[in-house]
Amino acid sequence: MSGNRLSFSSRSWSGIFGQGILSTRIKSKRVLFLFRFVFFFGLFYLLWYFFSPVYNQILAPVSEQIIKLTETEDRPVTTSFEAVGKKILVYNIASRNSPAVRVKGNGVHFDMVFLLALIWAVPNINLKRRVRILLWGLGIIFLLHLIKIFVFVKYCYCMLLVSGDVPYCTPIQKEIYRYASCFIEVVVNQISSVLIWGLLYVPYWWKVRRPPSIVHH
Image (cartoon, rainbow, N blue to C red):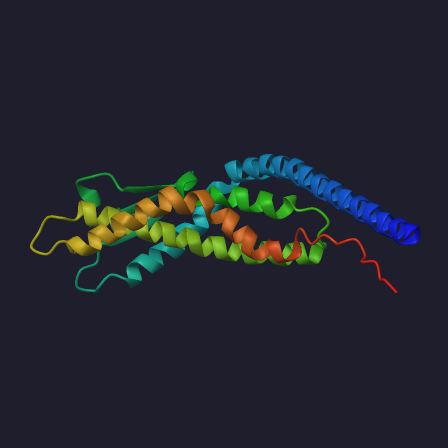
């Protein structure tokens, strides 16, 4: 009886000790992640602030081609996209009598700062794997930025091009673009970077080894 009690007590204390080590490791990883995130967020914010005009130079011509592909030859609307500093100006047939559509860079691709900071904040990840995840993340968020610009420009066209015999879009299309634009602004801009990061990184992260189980004979 006493031997059994002693054995049971030893196993209990070893389990408690193992859980304590596990809890300490999790807390230390979270603290390290937080410090790394703050550091890399500041770093990538500075890079984004100075290099966002260059990124707009990439987004503008690609977005222009996508928009023009959706327009018919008998009724062209878009004249050109022009990256000007932190904005993208969209010239169209309505621009003769009104200012060009302005696409603000911070409303389109500021989420890239969060994504890059999250990717580099995760500790203890192989560099090759981190770079591979980084490339996948940049590719996905680039496509997302093109979608944002497409929806915003289309919604602006629906609002601006309302005169004439045939309006630019039907009332249903206008509502679809309006709700899509609101959804992007309220939801997508807030959580897109976290979702992309989670889908790419969570399988490799927070895999904590459990204390080895005790084999009883």
